[in-house]
Length: 143
Image (tube, rainbow, N blue to C red; front, side):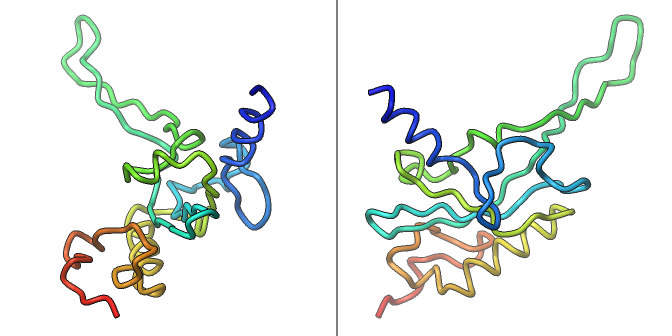
């Protein structure tokens, strides 16, 4: 069972242009996040999403101070699977980084582009249910 777990761990790493990305130091400087595609090689299903590399938190003020503290730390992007429950259950997912993005708006744009350019809302293999919260999969007829 140990070898199987090692295989699954290695298989679930992020890939960018045929290179494994396992550490924040491998991501270009200034990148805020990335757009990704997670696919299941067995069922041929896929999912597009975006993930921030850093999270911002607001903490209580220190004793004797009134100003709240803002802290930026690395997010859980290394072990992140998806926000989609079906994709979370995949053990053999292929996780691919499509674009590194330098702003949150850029992340939204490239995620939307990936969904729409692949006809994700009309493709039954695509697990994205909506794009931008405005275009929903159930509003389109699948041919």
